[in-house]
Image (cartoon, rainbow over all chains, first blue to last red; front, top):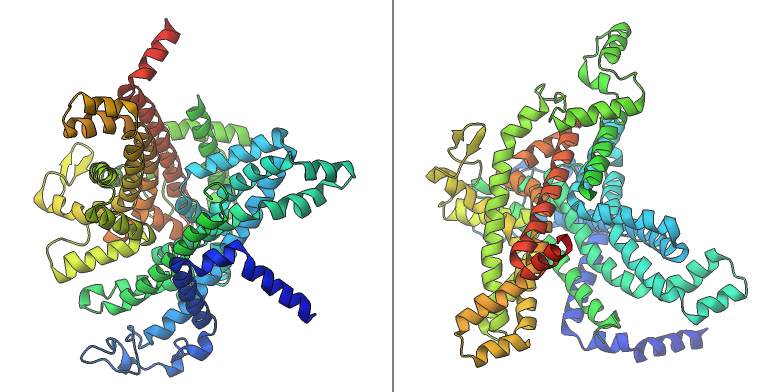
Length: 308
Length: 318
């Protein structure tokens, strides 16, 4: 058992990807940032200095405290507080977790949906392929933010208002996920068309493996690289889409604010001089998106055999 | 032909929005309406007709810009859209001009001075521009220019002048001032794309033989860069800019919300919040119309920019 793990570690340490990861400052810095953000936001119950969502622990006396370096600031609330006396840092950590959960789930949804459609389209071909790819083309011309808004509006029309707040997060995941699938379908189809004609697939066919096995056990692992790359960049896009929708007021309900909701709430206080309420959530959002983008750039350069 | 197909698809989509999302009758009448009255209204509105007849009627109505009444505002949708359209179109056109103007100029500059300090700064700023979501840029601008410096207004259109049905903010000083921040916010994203695209094209074209030949003939640098190189890099730029204008219309939803700009995007986001189906489907049809129109214009522009296309089609015709 121990030998097996040692072997695995050796394999990872000797691989090209690990080498390029260690020697790329952007990859190192951005992944360090990401690990910190992931850890603090998912452990926010333990890390956050305050519990921002228990009304009992809030005091209106603390409302609008500026960040700690300002004159009236205090070390109790590092980044200050909002209009209800919530600690901004804690609210940001909780909000980042929601943004990350929605972003991850949405992109996972669109990867699974898009890749299975693209893979089967490329593998079977024919009219099925034409229909799927034409659909993807049509949807690509619609800006994804508009698509997500439409889906959200339609779902609001179908279900009742009380129910909507409960399922808002799932609606959001579905709306963002469904607006991003065409990219994955296109890439998966393109890669499948290349793999399909290779010898190992012919061999698998000759020994009579069922199509399902060939597609998902043999082709899928070989087309994962490009999907991983656009999936990473897609994750940044999905997180930005989530915060945009929440900023517009059609995303997650204000009782469980994400980064976008926090920015929207803070936006109202911009003119009365409380800049920090919208600044810090925006700053966190940008850092999050930027580090994912940098990591995605690095992955594109390393994993893409075309460039190497 | 293809555009007719696209329009029909979108019409079908917005028609099904109309019919299958909630009960249209429920949305139109109050709680206390009796069942008989409902049935009567259903009959007069033709909701009992076969589905394909209803769809035909919807297309005919849509072609006349008749989308019924807004559930929430109780006014004809066409009127609401006509009222809001000038604001959005002025915003989108202003920001496309900004994006194209600055984008092409900075793209040529960075393409020529590949290693310059200024080029690197421009490229880095443009990379940051892609990572910043539109609404954060908008808030940043508002904070800097409206709150701290207090030089530009942060919401609304300023004074507008009514010319026929078109209300324009371009003729008054306050209208122009109000346009600066929103259009700049909206253009940044597209500008970064154009800078990168033009830069890549220029770098490639500067390696070609005809540029070397032009240099050998002793033509001035300015004429080479802007007359010879730029002209040949424009085809992909026009394509991307065309596609992006549609995106700009969609992204104007965000910009309009941040700057309280009374355009269609603002109308649409209210419609989504209150499930105002007629406005949503009308907006959808409008967006599709914009896309089709832009495609058409882009096709014509190809002919104007690239003489090779002109001779080809003349040969085919003759």
